Length: 326
Image (cartoon, rainbow, N blue to C red; front, side):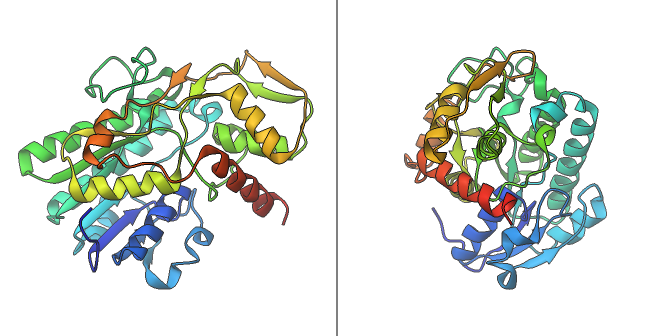
């Protein structure tokens, strides 16, 4: 990967759990980092360890003027802003998810174009894939079928952003990397209640709370690939700097774990032994969700993840203790 030394980088959503890891890694690599975040789902605590080394702007990307001002004079924009909620919330708020995510993406990419930003990272999502996508899922064209039903508003917004990125790459020769993360997680997750939160932190909280019986949404047989935030952002940095540009790349791997297996791993690590019941009346999302990482390995020199799921669960239990036992 090429050097980030003294490069001016704008990280949008840089106070979120994923964006804060990215900001930290960029600072460590010598970049001059500006963070743009409205703190709706992020927190300044997430960047406390680099707060004196970054410039922070508290504004909302629903304003094009904000995006224009924030991206002026930077060499790279890494756009991690997104309204992301758990499946319980997204299912009933598809229009809200579509509007908010589409507008913020459109605004920032247009601002970067006008400001002649050298390179741009568009963070899309595995939610762009249809429910019947092949497993493991390769980088299907963005117009393939319909995005996953449970998160279709969010998925359509990300598809619109990808289309804009593709058109701007061709029309204006912008260096735009596009990545599709699969289920990133990490110890800086912002808890916003059961309906708003994602599966892994929700399970950790319920297990650590001592819920018994432990009620798990869905059959428990749905399968996911989880990738720690630290590995996710390191891969983002490689893609932003080295490309490929204009071509979506999955950030995820073929390894799968069922939700039932995940529950057992969390319980074992936490030394808890609840009775587990599976509520099939609740939404469980796509039955299987894991990435074909062939292209990712090709363009990242066969990057190997550094954080195992077992170590990540230990970190998530520590996250619980920091968050709920103050």
